[in-house]
Image 1 (tube, one colour):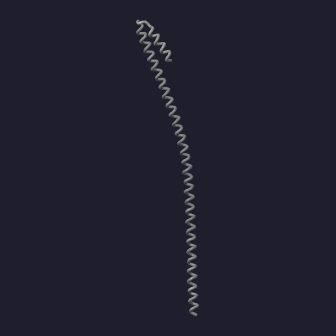
Image 2 (cartoon, rainbow, N blue to C red):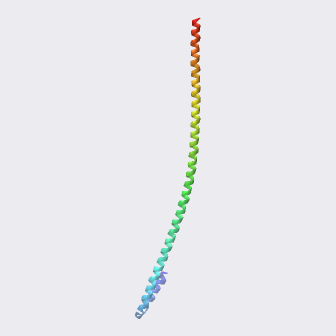
Image 3 (tube, helix red, strand yellow):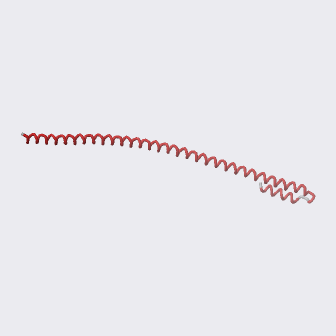
Length: 127
């Protein structure tokens, strides 16, 4: 493309001075073609930039979806662990309440037995 433009410039230089209008037109055509090519190149560059940005956006969205799925898995696992912890705490509290009741019953039996022993000893002393 540049070689063609150089050839046009050289041919315009070779023209006679009387053809200065023709030379001017050739120069303007050359400048116009150069501007046209520059604009086309800029458009291609912008299109490539847009394509690259779109590809990056697709990658970011795919990554976001992947992170979202992982987050959902993590939240689900956390909720399951939380429920298991609550069940364990309830079982522990029930166990402690049952044992507390048993200890109270045993303490009452022991106390009752001691009272009966005292009563029997007093009866024995009374006779």
